[in-house]
Image (cartoon, rainbow, N blue to C red; front, side, top):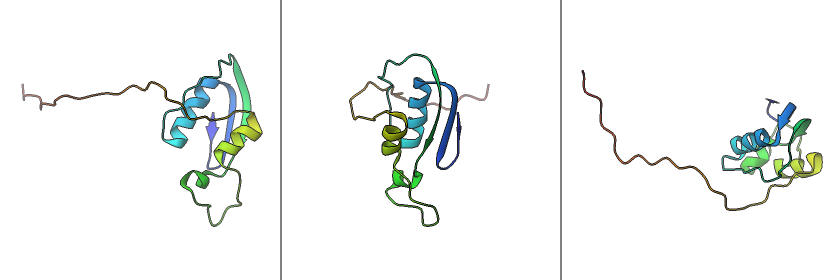
Length: 98
């Protein structure tokens, strides 16, 4: 998968990889519950500033990532409660000099 500010291009990418990409873009967990097997070639274009709630002043306005997913790829993000891994550190001790 290759990504720049407003375009994602994927070659032979599984759905799980798309979920990981979306997690990075949205900064929250995304679970692949499509149950779609295989790999896919696709492109996706959106306005990344829509994620921040403001359009970029010097770039043409494009669809939000949510709209682009649905219109361009036929995928829809829906809020759900999903299990997430959490790391809990009870304590930390500096190592001795030995």
